[in-house]
Image (cartoon, rainbow, N blue to C red):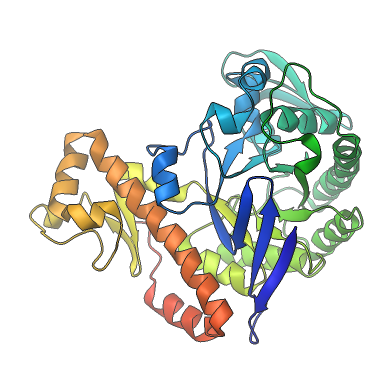
Length: 384
């Protein structure tokens, strides 16, 4: 299922292989986010050409629209979105807490109103697993409570205890592997891998406690949640360290919703294997491209007659065929092709970064490579 193939002698970085029903995923890995069963602005064919091995979809949004009956009858998410490689779905917990109207949290789950039409709904740990079974993802997530970073310690403690309790119920539901009516899944239920989610805010004690109790469930993998939710970067990295130290070495570790390229390198150094983030596609829609030097705002006036590609020596479709000047023109004119080209470039950059990271770990050069990368890459937010 998961095996560590190489480790770095100077830090916790490791290269591994995660085998799921729809193929092999080499780690560290970046998973493009397809919230609504699509990675924004790109097709499954383009994702395959970019060598994406796994993508993410959101259970909450699929549950709300188009609904489980539609997706189940059409064969699960793989068939629905024509994706034949690995797929991960999150539990919907974060969206329930961040998007839902008039939510009420109880020990059994969350009563809430849809952010679309106000319909009254309920998701608890059993429901979260059942939803993801219908969706048919290779990797599914336990239902968790994500407290605000600014929450008081006693409130974070309540969320941790509830998260662990819900994870146990998710594990029971997952182990039961009941058949789903009116579903034509491509993947048998017993082949779906359940990951637990570590919460605990910025409290070392609670992060460690949550990780230890989840590790005792012996799940196929573990995620670190409740990070990059408004806290300073140094606090985010400390939260990763608190959780990672208590997680099993032989299981994959997934930092949810992260992050910037430099943050990914830092988290790989801390032993994290899996990442997802909306940034490559989100900032592309604002005309921002990722490069080895940092981000580049392609709407800047000085680029209006620049004949260079987005990034020299980049092999993506955009850089091989178009200039900064042309892409800037498309963006300023509101042409869809402009945001598509920047999206393709950004995904190429992220996925290529992960291949480079894996190769550096395997060759024993990750320490030197990561130092050089972090010295060169200058994080900045110059997008509009």
